[in-house]
Image (cartoon, rainbow, N blue to C red; front, side, top):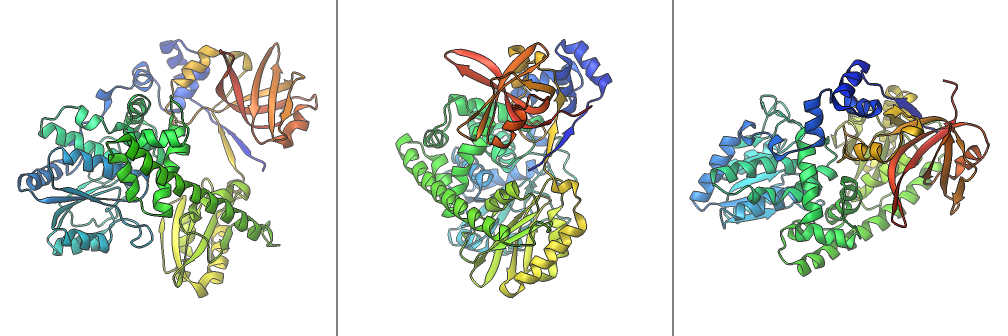
Length: 567
């Protein structure tokens, strides 16, 4: 698939000023300016995160109210229920708050709704369970900000609510005792992009203060916080970056038994990075809720015996194997559906349906289909007497807006710019397909239908050395708004040794002027003829460390290449 190359720019005055202050290569200063780092003090904070950089938890709206209500519950021996979502952010949030509250009260329980019996967020079944169990206070984590009716219902039953959430609130808020959510319009908390587990971390750090507990009483959960930050794809800036930095340190040096078991089962060796948490640890946690019951994930995180943690982790491992098999089979069947449609090349969207597809993986399948056919995509399956599904968007296209335009054909829908879910009647399937295609076609641009690579800087290959690489590496942990840098080298040639490996990957050996460098390009056999043509080409890449027989060298991880441009 042809990709658009978009070369980012940086204010050159700021680059020069930063270079004078830091005395490092101007290209490195470009990368920093692109991240909003324009002076020595910003750079010091960025490269040397400190726990002291974390914001005061008492700056968050309703923090005092939340802490006071929890103190009241503890003093009166009231039962507290920690209620969380079934994904990584939700289960880590529950495990973190549940374990911390156990330090100050024995009357603590937790609840994870079943994805298919109860759906997302606060559920009536969960509130009824709380009433029967004699719960006086529910603390919802990673959910609750939109549950007005259900929290009203709980209030009528005599159950108070504290909401810890990070999703965007509506104009009308639920009638909770306290709402901790930095995205509230009148919340003056200085950082708005915490994940659910990050909000919980602020609550327990405030509680530790009033109960005169040592910092370790809440810092010990930073491995769970880092896992949630990684999985929830929140910006790796400001406070999230600091939490992720120290959370990764905990993951690598002294993780809880649950994380350790998942690392072992996923065959991950330290040092782990955010990408290891995203691609190896998080899917095993998410699989529990997708394929079965996410309560297992919380049990895993609170387990104090390693052998038991490994046993629970093995159940999650099996869920993940089942999830992968379902994902692979459904992706194949869905691709066949798309490619057997003679009109599919003319369409601006993809909508596929099969009654027996597992609804726990339809969102993942939608993402897979976009890798092959880069269009807004909906994957639907049957659930009882209705059709349900998930949608994923391409970069820059507002999926929610397109679904809103189709609302007359839907029973319900929800989501945001890039991802959404929907329910429709079986007899409305064809109407929805037509309406969604029309809604997308009216709104999408040709540019949005071509995948884009955001390139940070054009770089001569003679700049690339171990010192340059080490400074780039100190920009980790990488994630949204602090992505791993992508470079472009122009007018390079094959040094005569580039070759195809296993009929799929290109082992590069390229030259530019007097300099040469090696690299690897995965799954790009179609480009070998250009590389071997003897003509100049432009190459887009990231930097990686290559270790061979005890020697370390910097090499390119090639992402894309094209015939050399004239400019």
